[in-house]
Image (cartoon, rainbow, N blue to C red; front, side, top):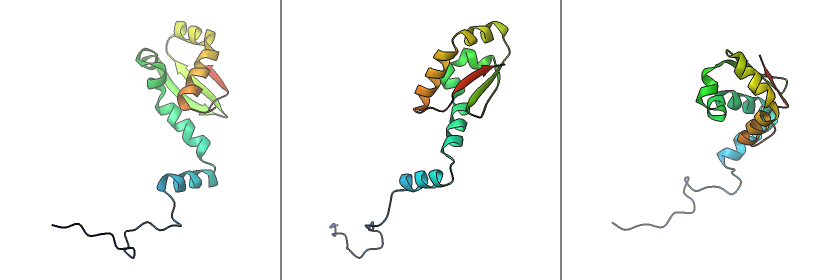
Length: 108
């Protein structure tokens, strides 16, 4: 079995004016202004990974509204502890996400 060289006129060759799928998806998200919303959804879905299993077990609800993260907790002592470390929680979340996703955290 011999290997044949690629035919330059082959329909499977990449054309010079094509862009990668990642670049086209990024362009679409930017055009429809969905980058922020996508980051918020990724934040809510990765809450357990960011904060850990113990805190996520005591978490009832997590949602983002107007660049504020709202977290409803079932434990009053945990709520007080997280309120005291609010700045650290914001830095942890934004560094994990790789961009400034939220401006404030409210523990309910």
